[in-house]
Length: 290
Image (cartoon, rainbow, N blue to C red; front, side, top):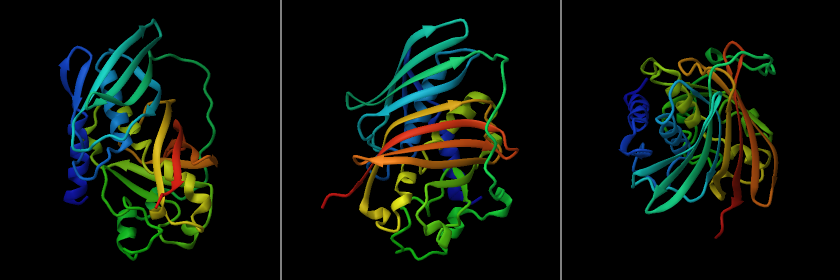
């Protein structure tokens, strides 16, 4: 792992250690001040962290969020938690992220006590395992930097290592398609010791390159640099304990696009084939205005 990649994973753990301002109020710093917009996954993870600070002995099983305004990476984010309900089995929290006195994000979170019940799960798709694939950043470094098909983030080392089933730049990768399976792994896994943090990190990862999946059926017609994309709303369901210290298959697929909005679904699978979590997001996908 490079020094840059190590810094990104350590920095993510640092910013998830929110500063408590007052009861139910928490302040979060940002991964980086570079760029104008906050990454949605960071806000998801910090908002879930804030909600976790108000419960004891429970774990998040679902969250439903709206991205209301673009966040400013140069300013910290204030998270206000509302304690909606404390039940015997389920507990509900509402979190609002605030910058400049305005809400930029809102989220409802449900927590549950551990329970036994029926068990079944859809099997993992038949894809190559991570040890059979190369690191995306290493592959991207070998591709022409001016290739318009490449997204801006693909050559930047992030807190999660990624290995795409369709190798970047390959003929298969460039074809119009409706799905995009990618293996991911948190780079500083030994530093993660509890399930609460693992689920917050999963929330972060659940927004990685998700909305761009809605553009894949059209990638032979228009390049990513011509598109404006942003997350609009986001739902995450966590079915089982999250093995964030292992490889997870992030299997993304799009079902429809219309009215400059694209719908994307995804599942997280452990390398053993166990279904860990599911995601659905609608995002803005439109041709940039001149």
